[in-house]
Length: 93
Image (cartoon, rainbow, N blue to C red; front, side, top):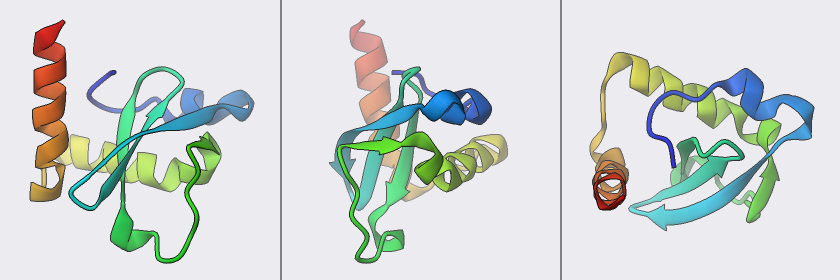
């Protein structure tokens, strides 16, 4: 699992896919084939169906939002669970 900005061009090229990783505090967390993690807010989903595996291009909007948040270095309270999870996971390795 990689914390930080996503190489979006690489993540969506060649019909790449993303894998659902976990749900926490109103956010769905997906992981690219390269281990990059990003969140999808449940309240933004509406009545859409999100599958365990999705074409990466379908979630590119959320990858861009993730990168923008990283660039601004503004972790929101909703992202706090991910930060704690990543800190624990990376420190356990």
